[in-house]
Length: 132
Image: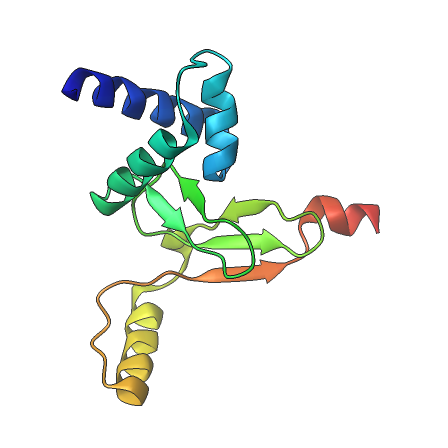
């Protein structure tokens, strides 16, 4: 069982390297090309485990399927409102004091001690701006 699980996790990790912020269905489709025995449920279970263990990042969206990122380290994303593409932002460009100030505002307004952040920005990507 562990060997199979490791093989499946490896296939998912490889698919995450090929695809840009994919959904579980997109990862499944990529793996299916070389491994037709895999099930969508297996992909979902492994993605949930990998995200839960901090190996990958889950990007939840309220109006569409979750997406996954091979980079589990804290960083932020921006989604294009026209084409839907998701980009990583340069987390290092955001001054740490600005993030601490944001945490304090959130804590003051909710009483919740911030332990981590998930931020999603939205706008129009350069390619879509160029084509408009």
